[in-house]
Picture: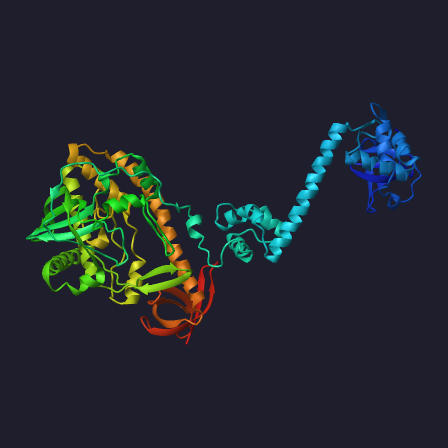
Length: 602
């Protein structure tokens, strides 16, 4: 093909003017830049002359008429330009070519151009209209997001932003298109801004993917079976005043201790639907705004101690030898009569009657554990509750009755661990290695420092010491309504008592691993949710002020513990006072999304 100076050619997708012709051809592009190209790199559109590419603009012409005339035929670019515009010039050649590139009416190459079939053209028109509609809808959506005035239909696309806010995805084209940073924090702020989430929304249950609905599984009736009648014993279920799922109670009969536990394994058989559901959840989920059980509410109603005149139980009994170690251990299904008693009321009765006897036993047992290296951290605790969108924080007093109940639960756990060791029953033992440093001072700063050296407890099928409890063997066995590991222990005990057959170590270990993963998510959710609602409390009480204790110092950075809130806060202090000094604080700012609170000294 012969190219002449000032002819119009196509280079890639751009128009170009031929400037010079030699072995290579020099062309000028629309932006004014010049290139030397091979002849095969360009296609002739018009011989010219064209002196300026700026004259090339789209034109209006008889497009439909030209399309109809080309029915079943082909044409050159010159023919097409003449049909549409009535002449063939560089300007009409380029305008005609743009229509071919557009693809709605014509298709092909400059030398052979054909009409687009009507069916294909209608489909293309429909597609383009859809695209226009989508672009209009997107523009309207963006406008509503920026104004914070959403329609119900906007919640569906914003679900992608929610997944980013929850950490389930790392990218969001919506955030990108809106000009926001693609981060969980930025997504969280946007969702609150547009009222997709409430200002105080707690994202952590969704973030950790825990179940937020009660199991919907039918609960079988309690089977008819022989049970030891222990209704003559005074059994006390001592718990928080609002508790409705008491799963343990204590009795004493001369030298024999009884710890009665809700007989959950009587209704939850191994590998049943109830069992697998509880295993997948790992534990009850206790949030300030709600409680989600791992088992159906109907099961709790049937088995929680003290809910009826007589309660079915799995009773663990033992005596304590001179070393305060459980001995003569017996375990039996039973029927008991339970007196429910809040911690505060029990605390007032520790100097009289049966509770006095129980208290004396628990104190002696505690001495033995501390002599074996047990550690007691008396750090502030609070209960956080959300009622009608208002956060309530209630300090938990350190009560002797609460410590007494803890001691009896530990006795039962030790007794069951010893029983299972003696009888070769595979169960999840709770173990913990000793901390790397001892507790050096009984102050808040000392206990705060000591806690950092604690190793997490582990569940495993081989018994090993639990250092912080001061026990050589221990398992959790007194909360089968609330924790799957406890339920698994009960299932093994029940099977052994029934016919001596139990799950082997491999199966128990597998079940531990599954339940542990779920329980870990539950614990993370609870911890983060409590921290979240404490921050909401400060938002709701912007004039809060109170005491803090200085528990750690690294240079000018100090850690303060606020007992009233059971909350830690860090700040910089020049010339900080000594550890355990009490400081007066007031809240300065709270950032719910970053999970931070800021205080200043009074």
